[in-house]
Image 1: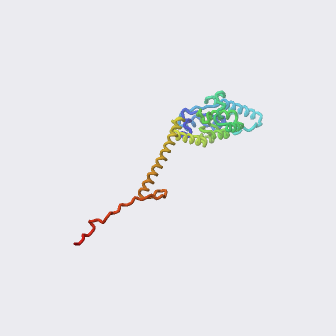
Image 2: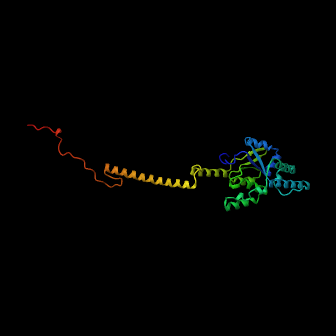
Length: 279
């Protein structure tokens, strides 16, 4: 995550818990403070829970109470996966949220964060995905995808597969989950790695992100001028090479013959090499 989500790794960490995670931790008797402290290398952190999550846990607890009294099971939901003593587990999970977590009120959640800056097609896709989400899951998704890259720097702890899949498709949303009683931090998603790769490519093209748009344009113009100068220099060198070859060998690279320089001829015999006449 230091490479793929650098702005997330700032202490104190913010852990956003959903109802499924709270209920699973109560059922498996997981000491959340100790497990998170070890996983985060004893750095400071704070638990957060949305008001809608507390309302959802309260409603599920009431539903479980009615089921226990009537003996008739209602529609299938997250509470059906908690085994026996569902009502007690849900009430304890809600109480943990009230006692140990900072509560995020519904008015503090940016309701348009999930579709910010992603285009109309992304908006339709997310709205379709929200159809199967509870109000609590929608609030968690919106909080952890502000700006399209988790600007609020939340770690999300959930056992909800649908919510996890939706968050994996967004960059920079670290996910915690419980494997029975073991706390697991998932590796960065492919969306996070792809997003980071794009940022690094932009940095390389803009000198580490320090140049303005106008400065980048100036650099591009200078590079083009340097390229033209280099091409002209190469052409000039080629012309000089052809001229030297033509003078030396009497023929140019184009195949046209030139007049060779006439070699100097002796006007007469060398007197030193001639025999003297006999008298």
